[in-house]
Length: 360
Image (spheres, rainbow, N blue to C red):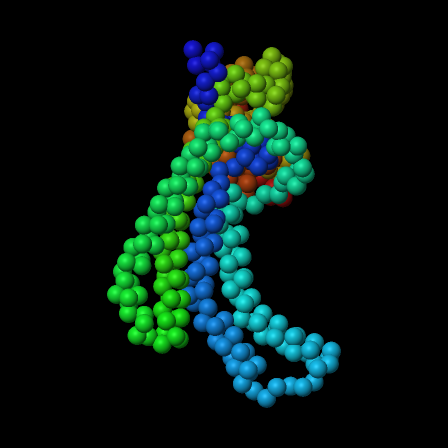
């Protein structure tokens, strides 16, 4: 039997998922974050890298081509350094900011926001040789090793394909000037890296799918674990059953006291029952003293018949009162006319007249 063998045949409960998350057990691919960071970094360099190149070219020209400054004092050095850092920050901060944003987004999209300060504490169990060998030869590490070899092969194929397309230009580099060669090499390097990054993102998505599947398999529970968790969260089943029985008895006791005082019970006719009481001298509007569905509605009808409380079938009104009015609360103003019509009918049966409801 699956239960006897301890097979994890049950889906993980929300509590199990929450516990795993609190201990840092989430589906995450390190490769996906790295691949996204590489790809975004190359895109940012392709977009904003020209500003960095122009900045260093201009700076080099000023340092080597202009008249040298002969003020070799601390004030001059600090001022020059401050100007250089501020100008460089204007160029580099947008690049660093976008790369940092991509790194954060790549991780948040996988696992969301959560903080685990206990992970900062040293875990001496991780330096155990036996546990270390177990992790090295685990199925997860074997899969990672095979996946790593496959990634190297993919990177080699993509790089070879990109360079092969440029073979004619590469063979003719001797005919170009040094700036042209540098520009060509920079473009080839960036575009080849971008294509490698795109390939790594595709592979990382597959790795994330595997990590998610493995995480779901690790979280699965045996039937015994599900029962133990329910017992720990909700308490002993016998005590729980007894508590529910007491709650049902209290509810029936309240019905036994409230329904006999009602003037009418409005029904649906069998699914719902709403008991309404109205005392013109003390109430500004009729009050719902009892309501219920299913077995409770059946009990309300039985009590009404036992104590001579009229039953009136008004499906839309019963549904509205059951849905909108809380126990021991007056009916809303838009239901005055409908309830007054029912009460007038009941009072007519009893040979009484119903006064006009006084609005609070």
